[in-house]
Amino acid sequence: MEKFDVTIIGSGPGGYVGAIRCAQLGLKVAIVERYSTLGGTCLNVGCIPSKAWLEASEHNYKLKHQFEKFGINVKEANVDILKMNQRVQDVVQEIINGVDYLMKKNKVAVYEGHGTIKDKNTIVIKGEDKTETIATDKIIIATGSKPASLPNIKIDKKRIISSTEALALREIPKHLMVVGGGVIGVEIGSVFARLGSKVSIVEYFDSLIATMDGALGHQLHRSLRKQGIEFYLKHKVTNATATDNKVVLKAENLSDKEEMSLDGDYCLMAIGRKPYTANLGLENIEVEINEKGQIIVDENLETNVKGIYAIGDVIRGAMLAHKASEEGVFVAETIVGQKPYINYSLIPNIVYTQPEVAGVGLTEEELKKANKNIKIGSFPYKANARAKISMDTDGFIKVIADKQTDEILGVHMIGPRIADSYTEAVVAMEFRASAEDIARMSHGHPTFSETFKEACLAATDDRALHI
Image: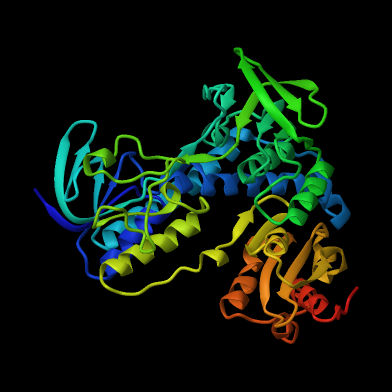
């Protein structure tokens, strides 16, 4: 029986990054993955394919609605959904191949099969044609999450689908109904709306992306409505019934209790995800789990069982790939005696719609609830030269700072290419910059980044220059 210093169960962004860092630190590492490809949900059926679909559908939308204004005339343009699907799969496979290479490069032993913890130092791996047992000093559980549904609605994977099936569709839905206006719902809804589907999003709360700053959800609602998506906010879904080629969705208006009904060919359940801990053998070593199904960990991400750690979607906190990766590195460094640190308040949330959305730090609602004395500066993209050039003028950047010290406490953005430009805000807040610090930095012109400078100027005695 082969013995390892660390064995990681799950090969998503938390698992494989943790494995690499463990190997870099001189540990003998194994990773156990139940599926035939590495990368977990994110690489195979989540972050990567969804962003590839979003990119493709955005090109289609701009070609049909904006290119003519740029002086580019295209007589006829059609979507080849099968070719688009194939390109998405090619991108996914290329990135998976990259993870395979990294495992070999770092001499990480890869075991394919379902890993079950027999005891705190033994894992049984059941594959398709064989069962193996390995010994290990430490275990990191990185098994991620799976799509959730409402208690009375079963995901049949044919007409009532999760994000996994939605990202593998080989036809453009005529009418896609989406239950949930969070990140998954608005992203996948955006994809098919831009490809020509009628899209209806039904959301329980009165705003989209309800966990983020309220102003972002309201602006995203306006922007997506202009793109043709219809919304039913403050509606509680009560039932969904599927036949061979149709789904009937029923919901209740929370304001007046009136019931409404929608008919479509697909219904996407996008109400969130739940931790995946099935058949891991956690009961064999009495690992504690909370009422949400999350594995309970301490400040070192160690469970109540010494030497057993858990990271990513199976523990507390936001279900984000980049959070899981940071935690994988954190545990690896903790195991060898280092003192790593993660600032959870500065792990950004990102939504890859058009316009894109990102938030880092505390929201206005959270700060007001905590009775913080704050000041707010905001600047719209419609006043930014680069946004005018690219015809991406929807959105704004909002900077929240402490009224006395001017320290930036939260930055909330919605606009073009936000996913690539929000990092300046993260860096600023990690080094506890003031709004004036950013306002006095030179930003290239014309760039989208000038909007952040202007928002910081607005937060500093209302000094924005271009509005």
